[in-house]
Image 1 (cartoon, rainbow, N blue to C red):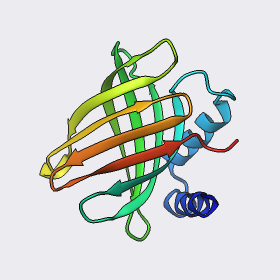
Image 2: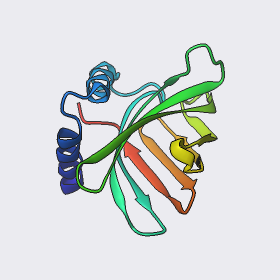
Image 3: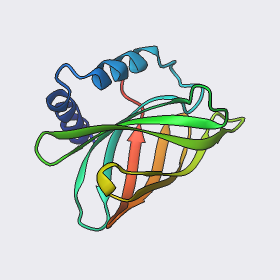
Image 4: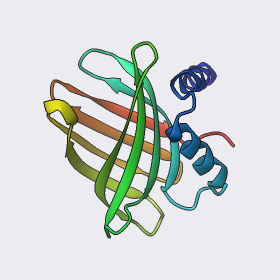
Length: 148
């Protein structure tokens, strides 16, 4: 586990030089209540393809979508290959439950005609587990809260 966190931290450092996403993630991490009160805020971990075994670091900031009741913005930064990273925001219908958790299920069209990306999962205050599917790929997302 410790080696995974070191690998993710190294990837973040290599992928984020002067990156606005990294700055936002750092601010969200500093503002995260300990213990978290709901599923909103920063997440850190990885994605893994069940099709080809590829994996990479993944960061996410979850927040209510401004002006869109019942939707949450999942702001991702994904790493793959050598020093390749991409940022995207996925607005997903999700309902916060009394225990602070979120059940999510949504889809979005990917740029450049890459097809539809679908995600389904559950976030608690401390865990974020989901599956994804897109054109020719499917896999898992496993995230935890960043260390203080």
